[in-house]
Length: 172
Image (cartoon, rainbow, N blue to C red; front, top):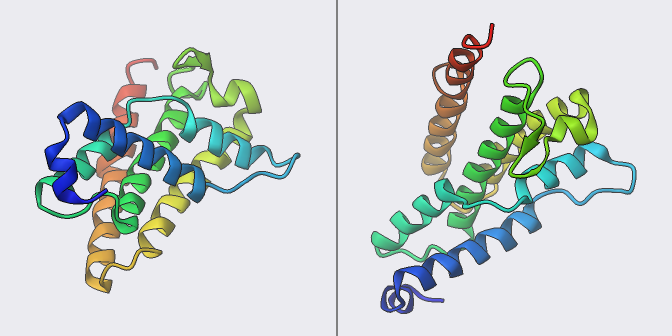
């Protein structure tokens, strides 16, 4: 779909088209699992579970508003990186040492399905994959570096880590 067609569509149609494109892209960029590969299964389960995908959709809508094509692979890669980081954060958030959630979106939490060690490894692998997606784009080296710096700040000590730490103190 091109940008002018997307702008002519109503808001809901555009969102549905972007959600579909994002879902298909996520399915392509996550590793397929061998029958006994629990980490890959946990990565896919956590990321591909039904959800609103608000964070990556906001990025794609900004891209559209700036007159660019949000269906371009590079932008879908960036949006997927954001969604994959979000999925990793939910795995970590649900762990017994954090919120000890048994369910996420009506389904058993990843650590309940696959065990704590697999859940932790899946979260680490997802974070790694998110950075890999940025590097795999055709963006300029400057833009890739900037995107990696922004994402690493969001995931790091002053972002996701500090946010989770602040929340976990409520339960200690």
